[in-house]
Image 1: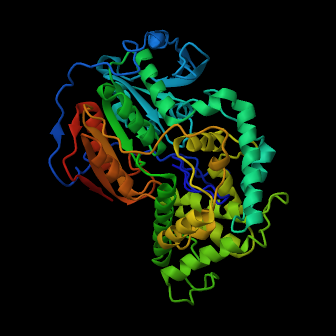
Image 2: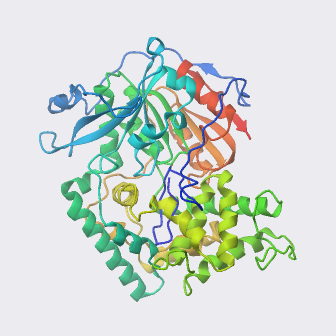
Image 3: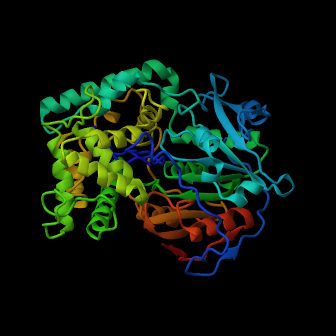
Length: 547
């Protein structure tokens, strides 16, 4: 899930944690050692799930709509596309209301189960975004996607959602235009500034519409969830086993809403609350970022972050201050704010560090506490008048390569999906004043840097297709929701809310920092998730894993 970008994108999220001071230090994914002997969660005793009963077909399947039979009956042709990776495509209708109309090809990749004799099925995965490529995620390093024992017994399958990655990607701007778009400092506190922001948003939207055509109105999560059921059938699975992280939890929850009888082993890690509005997402995420930045500052002051110069009042690193956390946060805010009038020079003379890029550079490493030293070093360099390291962090977050190209369409796809998934927050003065007040209370440091009146979805050429509402998934088997107490992008309360909404949701709490929990350093979490996926062992009520 992506946090808000300072270019006035108020409610965003992503799963891929990219940031780097060198070329791509944060692109690497954490790979854990095995979980043998891992501590068990504290709390109630785990329970073994009974074998699932027969499936009752639900609306949208061929028994109810024969026009969909040609999609559900397809048999994919898998071809090698890596050392162990296999690739194929699955055909789905562009518009499920008109299944006889245009179609599109979804890109699918898989790493087959290592032990064919012990294979239990296919595990479909999504890394988040919206806009991150599941095909690339699986293809890059499957051991960063699922544990060793899961890889032994499951085919791990990545599906690029419609409009994302290799599935007819939405492409709105060329690389140079995207550079300018991300660097532009949008000021929406005045009528003239808001008008300029609306013009900018219309230009972006027009580029998306010209590229995607009719697909632009069909890339929302409801259609992507229906695609997953077609993929399930094409894989020959009676039920969908699924691992979704960040935005991937919203996609999984939407699937469970529509196809509860088809839910298999479901893990939703770092959840979005399906009932949250765009404004509620903005406030919750700003609060999460504020908490992560405060935790970073506290670690700095305790001497636990190498290269940190915060907390001495003037940022010169001489230790003559009182080590106050609030003062350290103010240093960061003042540094970023100063780039509004005086962008910092960088190693690229054509790309100074503007305020949006500076703020993004601060946000990027907050996703992983192991990257805090990179943030400390980048801030120290910026305090010395050089924005190169913060720019590198911002570039890696956006997937910008050293050649100046962008590795994926994540940024465009994110906006295209978000504008269909959430009715836009009105940009009238009264609504925005109320939102600004909430943000300032929730996140005094980030409110002024990362959130503003974003008119993009308000001027979007396609109407929303999803109404935020709770997901119950009546009739689905137990779903495992994993929430991290210090998650900066999908706050813990969202995971708790989703687990409560689900008819049979079970929450596993990880007490720690960073975005999502599975395969991020907790042997306790990894062992509990693997036991659920492989053996149907559900963590007990109130289960908690601690750092």
